[in-house]
Image 1 (spheres, rainbow, N blue to C red):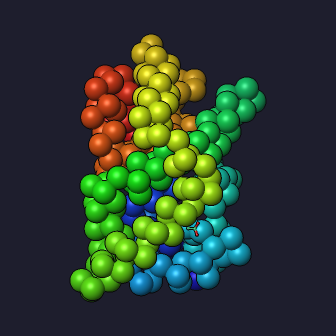
Image 2 (cartoon, rainbow, N blue to C red; image 1 turned 45 degrees about the vertical axis):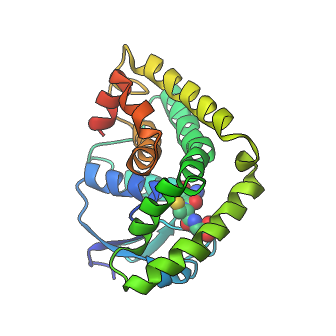
Length: 227
Ligand SMILES: N[C@@H](CCC(=O)N[C@@H](CS)C(=O)NCC(=O)O)C(=O)O
């Protein structure tokens, strides 16, 4: 595997996998993708101890978790478009944004995808891409039940839809404010903070009705288009 092209094990529609694709693209590292759609999904759990995607095979190593993959790529390809600021304060801010994207925005993404019929139907199409037609029905029924349980366990789906939507809109308004007089979330250049946050928002935009709220914000839209 040492000199082989990198392989990203992914669900194309996962925001964390999208984040890793953007980092690889940014650093111009060639890679192939392997998708775990439809009935292949349980195989993804066997790729690492944690059982989540993304997982990246690169230079003979297997790395899981988008945070760890990002750090590995930065350590091993530091000259190719650095994404982690050297300045300590900016680096600290970057880490907070990255964690916020995974710990908060991700659950909005999850909620808007699985708790609304239209969004779920779109998402199920992505989750079944490239698989035999009958698998789509399995994904649509069994898949959704599992995800709705996770949402309840997290707690977000116990709140009324109106409240979750209002909370999300307030958050993206804060981002709009932040980006109204700066190009990037931190400092003068694109960092992992931009990629981590935008990867969640791109997925919300792609499958949910909240896309309308996102596209109504001019600075945020311009920033998303640059990532
Ligand atoms: N902290 C992880 C989170 C990855 C994650 O939650 N991936 C989801 C897909 S979006 C997953 O694998 N879910 C399957 C599961 O939880 O079993 C990262 O940054 O990579």
